[in-house]
Image (tube, rainbow, N blue to C red; front, top):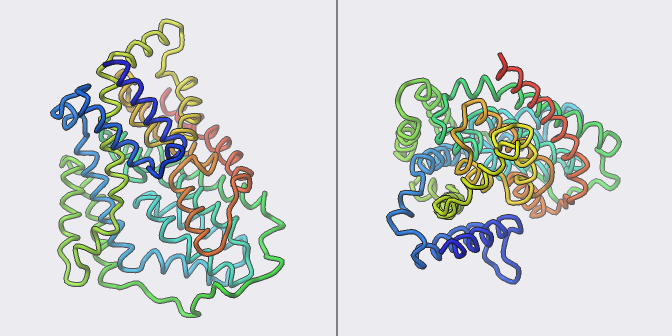
Length: 410
């Protein structure tokens, strides 16, 4: 049975790296779900074990935050932000700074994937109309969204998972991870500005992707409700109430509406990501039950290379984030890391998030940006992204490692 579990695990994580199994249309979510199904049906783990392996509080927090992001999207807030940026009279340098600041700050409180999904098309079409090349701005949008999301427990899915597993305090997390996130945003701006400094203007400005001159304001009632809900959520995180219950309370209040139907709000929830998490929980639990991960960690420790050491965990996290993806990697590492301390979890959260800027495949936010840009006629290539992504990641990680080492020693 151990051989079956190991085979399924390798097949699932290979699918995470490739995005799908060759020759089939099944994607990462389907692969994780199918892996869990095979393990249960084959008797490698019982249905009860599979249910217990799923970290329900983490999924509840992720679901609640998706509902909050849905409220912002449904009231037109993201569209308003992207239109205002695109139609701003500011020059390219100032506009780039506004893009980085907006994406980073929004992603620290709302899911970074939702931010880039909503903002990319409107920002790209507005920039095309102005005769500006959207590509540097879109690279900055994704990089800043990734960097900004590193600041808080609720900024991205892997941070949510780390925060729930480690029972981390929201404000202590912000104090530790906020500065590296801010540096990452600044580095994103400076690198993109340096790499694209002579190529911001299109040689042949196009107007076929036009936007209206007036920027439609978001629904005020809906936006006010979303802002109050966000403030309430942050206040709840400062109380002894468990985070899952606090997020669920806020989500429940948001579902009570006279303007937005439940169907519309729930349609904006990323159910695929929730299923992906559930499948990975089951697959990694089955592997852990074989005893192989514990044996491997013990062998590394005996060889003088403890997995919990930043000098080893850091490079492995960067490599894993840009192959199998930061979310599957974090799910796996949390299963094998022996009693991780808050400092180590802060390190894992920051490195796994900032590493996502290295390549297009490093984070879901990057992939979403590329795909959404393609829908409006903007092609963002792998090498174009890497020219900025590689220096952004290396400089951000150097600064982050220094900061986290400093506060850990203090």
